[in-house]
Image 1 (cartoon, rainbow, N blue to C red):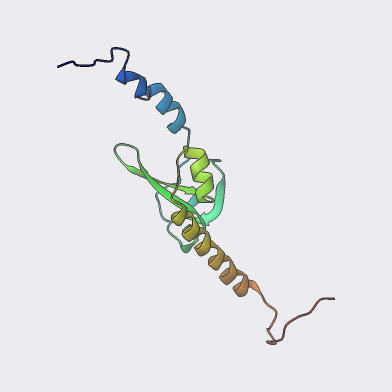
Image 2: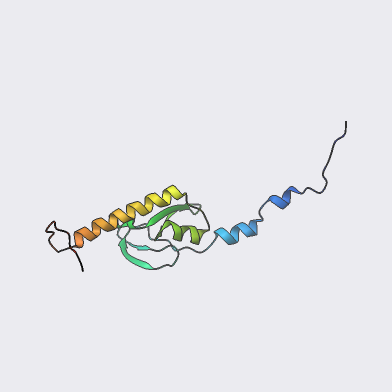
Length: 127
């Protein structure tokens, strides 16, 4: 019985080096305060936004909770695509579609609330 051994095979060639993994996933991020009433901070840019932690305004953002070891941190992004780009990850397409649909509905509702013109129920035709 002959046994074929491939002495050229090195399993370590197929394992991602830890330095590669750190450089891709360890980008700096900005976290919002966990205190209700604090301003939301964009996790990628560090921009302090007018919207408030713990309010309905959180729904405007794609939020992700990550574990920093001892505690969890909530990160706020403008969209799932910003999160993907910043953290070098992939978000399931169904999650992205659902988030964009909810965001679209929220914007329509906000527009309707801010639209002060009384509706006559008639279509407006612009020529």
